[in-house]
Image (cartoon, rainbow, N blue to C red):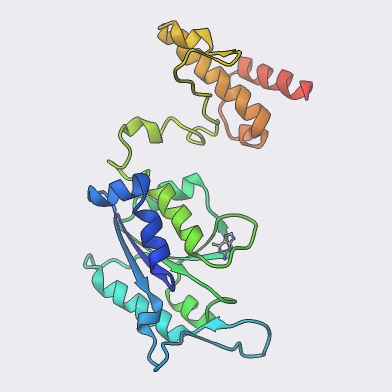
Length: 246
Ligand code: 6GU
């Protein structure tokens, strides 16, 4: 998986991606990152890439030319002959979720276009963008943090990035249930003890407890997710009694 990021702040992308699990994945060669500065494709003395909006109004608009030349440069670097998906980060896009991440993780190349100022000239968006994606209903100053959010989410689905292959599958959202609570040593802390079933070594009881805790937690914190979860009749009864208590 190679991520290509078109941005005015390449260091913001590189610095964040070099930390923690994504940093290790880059060093190990599981993912590749190229942050390309759109400003390098300005063709004027002061390297300006924005101008006033036609029609007037507040703020500046990123010009089509530098963005287009930046994209062409990336396209030429991709040697597989396929047109990559080009994701424009915008609050006007489809809200990113885990199932979109799973789809993106199948791609060999992904291009992210990060806007700033009041936006980007519509004509270049029409030319190159395949997907308009938002990360939620709030407004950020630019597309860099959303691109980082998406790359982080997608990276951990790429084979080899996480230590154990099962961990990406068994956690929150994979079956529309939240993950069960976790505990580590010491067994007793303040006035709180680890649930005894976790010390029992009984695998069947453990699996039942994990499942029940996931259902309880999802009912209390994210009842909206349960519409898509597959629950047994007994689990549905449990949910009903929990939601009645509230
Ligand atoms: Cl993708 N961009 C910006 N600027 N703000 C956002 C967003 C994206 N997603 C949520 N808010």
